[in-house]
Image 1 (cartoon, rainbow, N blue to C red):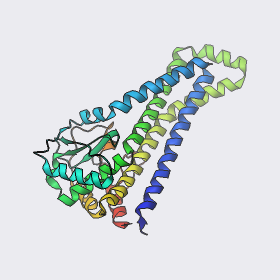
Image 2 (cartoon, rainbow, N blue to C red; image 1 turned 60 degrees about the vertical axis):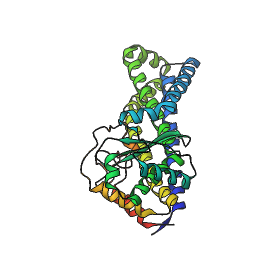
Image 3 (tube, rainbow, N blue to C red; image 1 turned 30 degrees about the horizontal axis):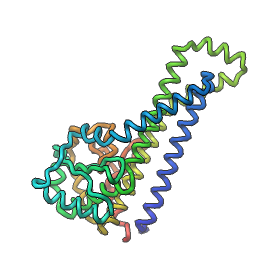
Image 4 (cartoon, rainbow, N blue to C red; image 1 turned 120 degrees about the vertical axis):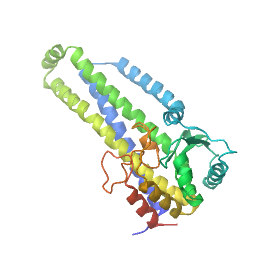
Length: 304
């Protein structure tokens, strides 16, 4: 059954909001358990708020620089990469956003990613292999996909997911270290005097400490997959052509190499998994990208 672009965009946005709410609920539950188990007062909540603010500021203003540095991206001179700059500019005009900065990654694998905290402070990076392999229509489709990430504030959404996920893991570590190095026996005696409620909280905290990182990985991967589907649909809408991107994804899927500069921390940013994990037809729970075959199929089913 064919889907309109608006239907697909609305559906994926709703799912993403639900994922973010789920993240926040997990974070709040861990904070509540920490405060109850260790009998922390207002000081804990003040410290927790300061950590959140500090963590947000650092990632908000530096996440794009870190992503570009980790991928070994360098600025693309307009005189040397005239066609690339021309396509980025025309797609930016069609998307109604400022032209982002353009970077080149010295890699053979065809790939690309967008980064930045908002459309006014955004960058697009493409590999040398992508430029050599793609036709102009295919390259336009890839750039439109990345421009959709910028226009839809996908990078900000993924940054929020990373922030909350990092805080969950941080609080897990605080809980475990405080539990063992802060005197588990003494705390159990105190909780026994209070009744079984304290012991139940400790048990729940221990279970959550084990399960939370798994939930973080699952939700983060799910958000990433949904944003890829959304960017495919939005990119096709921007250039009024789903076939260029579909053809580009076919070529990317046929390439069997891997990126040398990519890492698990930045894998979710790329248009395709830099380690080739999205070439399989079965969608894994921890996968950051949907299978390329599914994305191509959905693109070809879109009606504009």
